[in-house]
Each structure stands twice: as C-alpha cells, then as structure tokens.
Length: 279
Image (tube, rainbow, N blue to C red; front, side, top):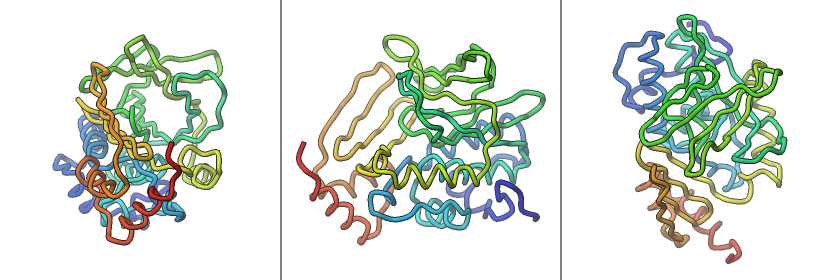
C-alpha cells in the first residue's frame, strides 16, 4: 500500500483495531467514524510520561505504534491524533489536520499548540479529536455553527467567532458555556505538529514539562491525575479529590488509566515525585 500524508500505509491496522476493540466494517462511513473515535478515546489515556521522564517524544508512526499499541501506553495530542489519523487514512477517510489555541475559559491569545483533525464525508465536515485530555470529545462533532451535542453525560458545542474563520469548541459547565479551544481553517501537516511538539515537550513554560498530566475522559466519569492529585469528576460536577503517595502512582496509573509501566519506568516515576517539593 502506498504511503500518504498521514502514514496510513505504515499502520498495522489489525493490531490497532484489536487494541481498541473495533470490530466493525473498515469503510469510511459516519458510523465507522463515530465508533473509531469512541473506541480510541476509551482505550488510550492522555499522558505525558515521556516528558516527565526526560525523554524525547517521537512522532513517527513506527514509534507511536510501538508505544501505544505494543506497550499499551497512551500519549498526548500529537501522538494520539497522528496514530488515529493513520487509522482514518487506512479506512479511506478524507481528512486534514488543524491547529488550535487553547483557551480553557480564558480569552488571552495563546500560541497554536493543539492538534485536531477534520474529516469531510458525504458533503459534511466533522471535527474529530482524540487528544485533548480531560474534557476531550468522546465522538466527532459536525462542523456547524451553533451545533450542540450530548456525549454521555457531557454537552459540547461549536460556534463561529468573528469573520476570520475562527471556530470555538465549548463545553457546558455548571455556570454556562466554557471555551476549550479556538481553531481556524488553515490546514496543518505532520511537519507542523513536529514543530509544535518540540516546543510543548521542551519549553520550561509548557504545562507538560514540569509535572505529570494523565487524563481519561469517559461518558459518566472523567479521571485526571495532575502531579499527585487524583480527581474524579462526574457530569453533575461533583468531584472526589485525593493525594496519591509517590509509591502508589504506578498502581493508580494501571488501575485508573490502563497504563502498565515496566519496572524501570515505574521506579523512575516514583523517584521523580519523591524529589518534588511539598506544596
């Protein structure tokens, strides 16, 4: 099979689908898009452990498969969406990459650092993003102004903003709409994500270089481990928060996020957190 922008020809599709549990038809339909997104989101936790452990974050498909499929790990936005894009590519979807500015309820202009995907199918465009973390979409969303979708216990919306083609993905919180990120129409490519990845995985002001960030969204529960603070959030916005002792972190990663570490990584991660100053 010939290679493409999204490296679908390099993907071991059988292994990826076995990892996610997808057993449907391998055709580019809306039903397949929804199922692929949902299965990926439920399988791969958002995580930045390579950064915390002082390692580079390679984005070539061979490395992504070895890590996420072979070693049953997760990844953050570039890793997640590039692996997912390869699967979409193999299915025959017409897709393109986009770049977003994170908002998380704020209006200040941040750099473009987030990767997401757009799929064109049967005359309609869809946003599909499996790499946002704590408030990530569980399924694709039609790219239509004012659309609102219910996914599990959570509600998301898309609105156009201004006249420059900017879109805003929002999540409904207790007190109203909460902006997650803003993105424009400019197509982004894996080479762009490589530049973004280098910045976000190495810059001292990056939210991922100084602390562990592990997140897993679900229909009725969102799990988040920031540093040593584990938070479980339900759709009624009730929360259970507890501090995880460093020596318990590997067990929590496996039990709550499906991340199984080898002995070396587990020991290094425990040592990293034992060395952190007490807040």
